Length: 331
Image 1 (cartoon, rainbow, N blue to C red):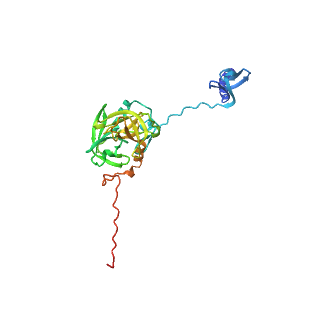
Image 2: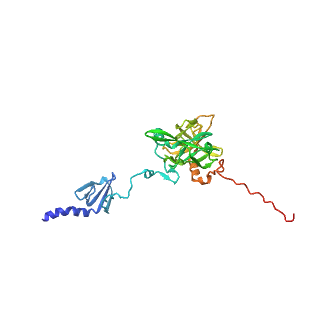
Image 3: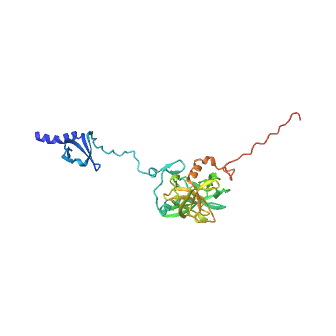
């Protein structure tokens, strides 16, 4: 009986002894914990509980005595309140305002074909009696960005939307389109689709301005000359092309009449600019409004609110008061 008890108690005693043990740090970043039994000039003997190891001095970088070893912690049980991953939780690299989505760090690069299939549905064609342009949704409630010059002096606006159904694109015309805000000097306009049966729209994400580099590949989607859903690719030629007192992105991606108001993407599928003009007597000289200017317009949209009684200007200027004629009691 005595021997049986000794055998049974041995693991418990060893385990208790290892709760406050010595540690040998080895050259390969490994460690041995136990009780040092003896130290010689060329080796150290360590009791690790189930056996005794003799470690050569050449393999030891540091000896720490009497370090407490914490017992391994059991993995925490999964909380019942944890919800499965959703689209919201997957957007760890994005910051969501109440109005649009902006990336906080660049998305990984992908090929243009996959990006067009994923985000092309958010690009629309904007039509007016005087012409057409492009635009894109910034949220699923139907708010979209285009150029001011696309809808300038127009109030009858329609939007051609291309919805994916059963692997194919279905054209849909939205005719109830309201002008929300205008900035003539930045050439930006904010519209909203208000059709009663309008679905939730796929929208785009704004990119990180500082992450954009000259020479980076970009691509545009729009409706040049009315050819809807046309994709053109190029590089970013410069980020600071000054024209008429404003700074623009210059790109070799082909921009033509009808592209105006469409998005300029990076290879992460994020919007880095809004295409708005080109030099007609040159090739590969397209321009886009930088994304930081677009975000400034959206963040201050209340200052650019469109007044229905003054369709040519985002502001309503009242007539100054006329000078009151004085009447003389003596006359």
